[in-house]
Length: 204
Image (cartoon, rainbow, N blue to C red; front, side, top):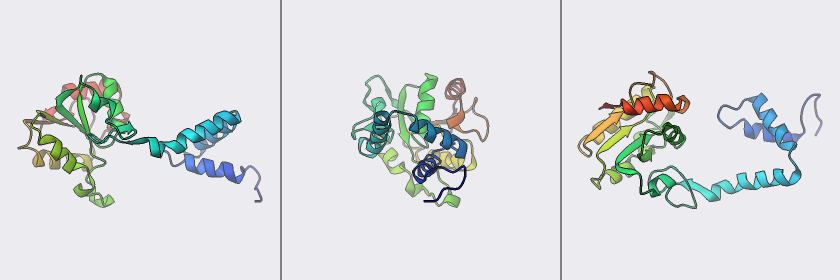
């Protein structure tokens, strides 16, 4: 293939394009990452590729809560006897769990919805893991459902939908309050902010 001045070989361009699919990675960041990989010894680069290629087989969703786990087993949180089974914190996706855990103020369980109700994006309640959550609440062990969803319109609508759906299934339904600004995203909040929001959650 003919190269234009300043361009990279086709294989490198393909790597850059693949890296740009990651959240928050633009062209320049993808270039730096790709060129950094090429500076690794051949053995390390091959090992890196093997680790990435094995992820679909090794990593899956926890059969209980939907968090990341390995080999199809329960995640470390669901398997821990130290967690408070009377609390379930509902999040939009698994990336939010790490943020909450870093706050150090929550010791219950989680449930990953897998998104939020967004008609404009063709995401309805049927596409979310709501039925699985309903089954978990049937045990009667859960005393409080914490809706740790975002502050945008779709997240608030999802929270209200869940609150109405489960109002007679659990003793208390709360949502994160003070500490998270209106329209703020949990993914970008620091640990102190999340801890404040957890400690000051409001009942729905």
